[in-house]
Image (cartoon, rainbow, N blue to C red):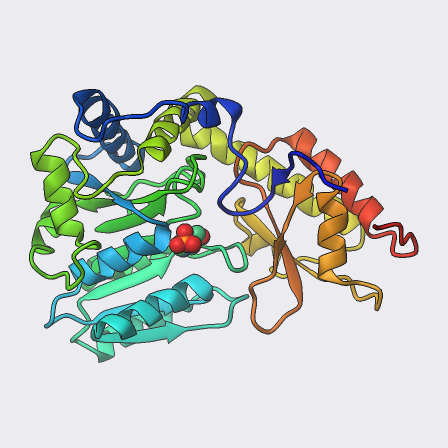
Length: 371
Ligand SMILES: *Cc1c(COP(=O)(O)O)cnc(C)c1O
């Protein structure tokens, strides 16, 4: 059985509104003012406004998925004399470590278990012991588990020890209120297909202008040269260096408008939060357990332990839900058998209600009615 449409309960790409999809029915010319001045420059300004009310910040859009921008930031911000401390408790923290290795950046890693918050005292000790550290990088919502990492506490350390602070807020920016000036963040990275609810195709960096300037000439990658991309957008009114993802950009402009119509980030956060609480309460009632303790959950995505019954197979469960109109995510946690359900995107409380009914049907293991 095939279903023509289903809700993506996944952390990007995610379910977008019809109006966001419709915004792509236009072919833009990449050097026309209608595109660059009106659409790209407006997006860049809006992103900065969503991130802070303070001045001294700018934004850069970069083709590719979120990881491209993370790599561009690391490759631009970390000079040959610098050393970065990467805090990792999941797959996306580990990916930053892999990037640092590939690029030959001096780095050190503070890693902890995927279901635990990083220990702030231990991080502080690392900073005290290793005076060569110049930068700190961490993931805000670690989408691996859905854990919400303490970016405020690390921000205070970055400030006290004068470190440049890089935050991968890929799956949280636009869905959780934050002020990058108050958090002392120098580089914040996110992408089009997460909480802003656009479609995939580009990522973006919101950064302290002073720090962007320092990236000049550092990148060993031409396409991922953050500084060059930023200068091109600054000097040529929103021009991208290479072919820009025009349709994705139009969809993103529409998505930003819809974020404002919803009431901004605070309102969206409330909606995600309601979805997540409803989901967890309903799942617990069906006998599922969450991977994390409740206090550690973000409103973005939740990991659940797989049912213990011997009949359970993720693939069957997945297909049973898909046939009822819902697509969930496999687990990404290395040690524990889990699956994940995202709440971000064009998803509302009634969708969660319908999902819980679908899950109740799907876990009726005795009923082997599939094709
Ligand atoms: C989605 C995501 C990324 C980027 O992943 P891509 O597949 O490159 O888009 C990075 N970090 C986090 C925390 C994410 O959720």
